[in-house]
Length: 248
Ligand code: PEP
Image (cartoon, rainbow, N blue to C red; front, top):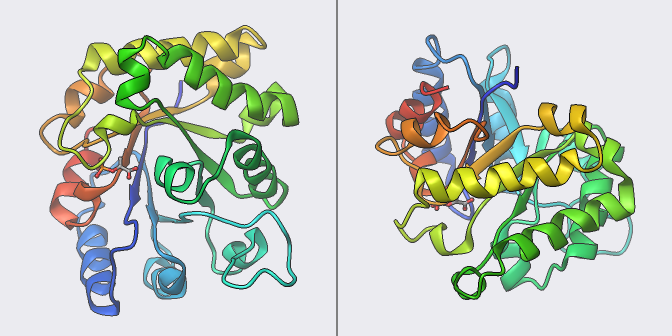
């Protein structure tokens, strides 16, 4: 039985004041939440969130990492640093990193490795653009992204990875994949993993991301192969986020 995971990706949205309000609001409503709940904060706020969530069931994540342990990489943050602030998760391969910062599947796979080497769970994002979907290339795109990780690390790495299927056309657009569209790709991802190892495929959590909100989370997470959500916009308001967390 896979556990439901709901992870909030705040992206570059935070201030000391909003972080305080948001975390205290989430904590106040966690009593009836059974899912694993993660908040992925911008780097400068990791310390603040770490302090606020001590002794709670809320988990901390970062939004990216550098593959190097330390050294002359101005502006970058390593897995060790993220761990130092109590984070257990890190988003890797988000489409905004792939499209805006030129992160290709080879680098993304190396980032997955750096996370795993440091006992961080990568929230490993895959997904196609609208153009790719319309060209019938969704499965080819997702396969290439996943196979880059399998090629570098082998299928066993998926014992420590959470996959997030995030169709690029649904991220931040208010357009959500239908449950049928999402379930179709989730089932495809699970079959792809099963081609290497049935047991690992069955255990791997695959989250959906792309304009998930309190209104559509139920029917998406009810799908057989959808094990939770990676939430952008709707993770910035405690009550909206909690409603999604309560689905699982
Ligand atoms: C995301 O950025 O991972 C995301 C899913 O964003 P949104 O929920 O706003 O579409």
